[in-house]
Image (tube, rainbow, N blue to C red; front, side):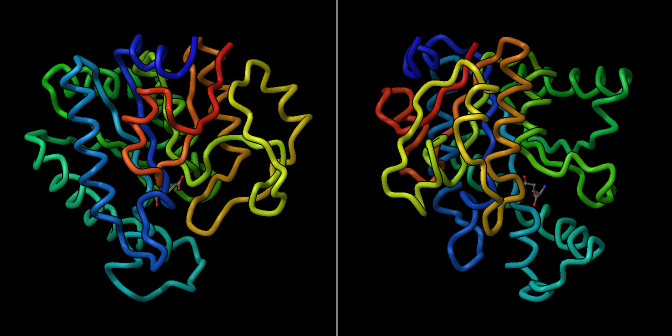
Length: 263
Ligand code: GLU
């Protein structure tokens, strides 16, 4: 099955937006992107699809709101920035989705929530109720109550856990790279985009994973972890570049550069 067919066949779609996609090069939140993204989600919903959004960007939004602490790496400052930025982020998401006549609901989750069956059930019930009522859940890690040791730490893995919890048909990771390349395309111009991955273990042996980028937390390693998690449950995953204009539409037409992970 190719990407266009997969999207056509998927009803429940989790879409993760990375910090690099949400932030402009100057570090401020890209509200034009958010408006365009919300409009594309509205199109998917008009086609009877259900959408759950996992949004990073609290820390980036905190920095651009406050305009200080940029260089403070201390965990407490980063948590404080997330507490500030999460409000800003949700304000922007609410504004963008409201233009499409859609309401949003916020879920802030931690690793412990996913390890506890009672909390998992409650999370699942909330998710299903929001979606059934036509509200878009927007999920992030509850950064202010997690210290390093107990953090999920990256929204790639959080979105995979969410896809599993909601029994999604498809997970789409909108990153700042078109997909998985045979080598780092920023360093090696001959690097080729791998369009379909059916064996992640084999892929890891073939490519050099490299490190994380400026704003995002994960880098390629966490994207592969997310792919391993969801494909292990039979949920395919698409990795694509959220910065490509009208990316969800292009994916649906089969005209976007992307890597499809499936089993
Ligand atoms: N939860 C963090 C934030 O919103 C980001 C995690 C990630 O970038 O994956 O800033």
